Length: 563
Ligand code: ATP
Ligand code: MG
Image (cartoon, rainbow, N blue to C red; front, top):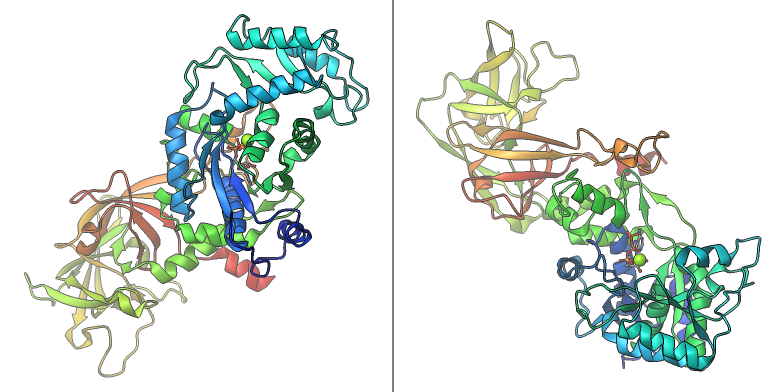
């Protein structure tokens, strides 16, 4: 059992309040929660909320949280998902210790409980088709109609159920139903299906079973077996709670308490495994961990720190009513974390060649650069400087407006960590008129970025030495959906019309040598441009590949400041 729960350390939302009350009343001796994913897809941001909540509660109350695979549906489940889910929960920073469970491990017990219900007269085998069952169920305004098989004897029910298990019947020909109340105002209580026939191979139990329990019969009983105290789930299960409680009471077994909260919705984002699976299967993204995906593996590959995702989940909190969270809020926490942790480097995304005419040919000067002004322990590095450099095309304007403080003809700017340079000439393509090269002079007295005569420049721009720079593939990611609500689309269309056609642009950038030497999966700042990470799949020594994690501008901080 867990240590004495500490009621004082946790937050004040309605779930924490309910748990505290249960502990004070002695209803439960401690706190055991569970995160119960179905292994039929990769985890996403919404699951992250549930993981942070369930594992967070266990931590705060000195209890534990189980990881339980809710693998009762053999058709869509795969071992690949079982592996990815564990990796993702761990990466988020949580640990289930020895408490890894599978609902399929309880199939024998669940079957025995089903027979118990039959023997008590609380369940019966029904031969109606699923369609007929739906018809008989009635509606919110009309009571249901009893199945003609409702009054079968216990003996006949037991015999039929055992033969269902033995594989005598085809899929869909019979089901086991709870005998509750066909007139209940709650449709879930109108003799719900508990078991169905499915001659399907299961990822763990193989061909041992050809009947499988429904979610409603498996979930609560699994919670009970594991002596879960608080079974936290999303709002759509509120109407299932009476059934959850009915099963447990009818069986006379240990009773956990189910509490519901609102699921996470985020604008510009789809959070449904069905939709994410479609994106993967139709090749609309490059897999479950495509950096544009809201999956945990996609966010990891994009360079989002696990801490930032946890910050976000803590900040949005839990509520009893559905709402949609602004994606800018998540981005805000990503920037906050990366600002502190990411080392700064120089890279030029859209290079413009600059020749420094008075700089000696063939010479290299090593400039000292600070790795992270936010982190004094991060130290410094040397960046090579030479006669030909690249700057960002955006940092030059031939005819600059007043407020443009970067480079223009006759203007002087600071090259970060290096020298002041003045633009003396602009070279254009004679055919297209496009600017292809600049000529500059530098002031050797300004080495390191300061003028001994005290003269100031208004702009500081980044650069890389042409001779020393490496080429890097840089993937510029943007929101996967251009519509704020991906579910809203014109009639006759499909939600995929809302996909952002510009969610990925791939360019070749020039990067300083130290960037080419990074290992895969590291996140850094490209000075003045944003945060970028080396791709965990494709980046290799001599073949740098970067993903744009996020730009530098924090629109959320701005919204908050205004509000
Ligand atoms: P999806 O709707 O994406 O298919 P699901 O609920 O079917 O999700 P499960 O694997 O059953 O996926 O989910 C495991 C747990 O994660 C459940 O307790 C579920 O309530 C929770 N969960 C799923 N999506 C969200 C979400 N958007 N916000 C909060 N919790 C969620
Ligand atoms: Mg589910």
